[in-house]
Image 1 (cartoon, rainbow, N blue to C red):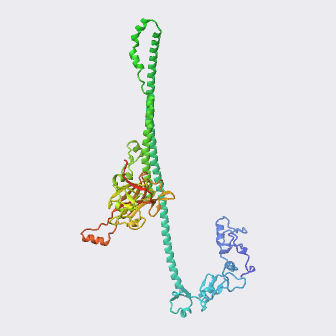
Image 2: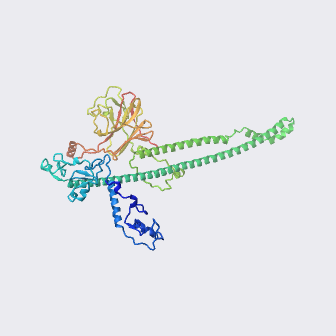
Image 3: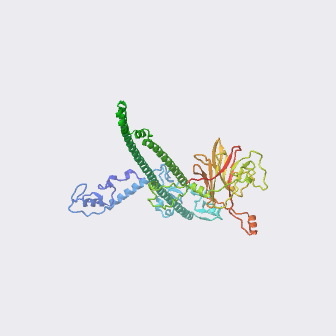
Length: 606
């Protein structure tokens, strides 16, 4: 390491213009040294040609030559300074020079041939000696012992692909003689190429996922934008509805006020007329009273014709008419009744429509907009209410009107503990001895279930059942092939689609398969069951609330007939139907005498 005394004064090797180590030092005629670019730039920026240090002026710009001896001294100083910076003591954790004594300097390179690490000073022979220049130098490493074979004390030069480990040349003649071994450099290149490919694949995957993220964010942004626009449009529609109702309210109030004014005028006219009649009556009564005070017989008899006693008597004893004010009060009460009735009807229709709309939006995965056949003017809510407004029919009303069927309980399928009424419309528990078994096994032997006599293998059908008389009940549809001789809980796998009610800690709870509670505002009193065979849908409605309780959708009622049945039908020249019949399915639980299900006629309102 160079000592401080062997180095020239640092200030002597600094340019006085740029204050840095000289670059291409030149000397002026006055003997001062400057960087060539510094002094030429100084003279170019000044009108005077002089020395910046002594201010000696020159007639013309001197011919400058690089001071080679001074330049070599500056370069030597720079090299010594760089060498001095490299020759710093190693700090804890850094690789130290294996040749240096204490204090050890920081290693600059590690030789894989010499298996040693060198500082800048001791590395000089590897940079100068021809044979040492062929050694492989790498960045300093501290684990050289891991690069040497423990068995043969040789450097790892090969890679065994069978054992997937580094080996030395002697290992290939010993334990790995039959194995495939390649140079470390070759395996390094192949592994590096694999890592490059893996990196590219990871990058492609990252780019793909980044693209997905951008698409999702764009979708969310667009969806949020569309949702905000839809909310704004919905708010505008409802605002138009409110404005229309307010306009109708104002129009109704105006009509009532006009009638009020007309009634008041009629009452005032009637009062004026009555006051005039009273005044005339008082005048006549005064004349009569004056005649009654006279004792002049002749005067009384002569005045008698002018009194018109008969007409006066008829007017005096005529029944008073009903006052117009009383009539107005009656009419006003009638108006309130009509308004309340109309508003209640509109409120009911709007509530039904809004409930259906909310349910459709809540249950649909991809809510498609209804086809718009009307113009924008026809869609204005105010125009519907003010010009020609007709209450729409809800989906349930259309089902009741078009798809209602007459359902009757099949006594021969009922469990022996159940009793079916004579008309086949009521189901209760048998109060007497169980019914006698039938010739054919058609009854449900273990569960309190019963089927209807009617089965359907196409189209749509709908029926209603009163359930308020039962504490535990089951409703739905079942295939004709349902097992009747085993205990089971109705489920789609067995060909049953139902809902049921049971008592849980004294509270009735409505369940769907598989035992999923249905959270309803109120438990239904009458349940409507609707089946669309072609569409594969079974839905349950609360008839009173006119809302959907639960729906099974996307069903497939088709089934493949058994091979034997198909064979028999083919031998008979017919084909076995793959469309099984669906039968209305009923059940009651908790054996109480007052438990009852009743099939009710379907009624609908327009």
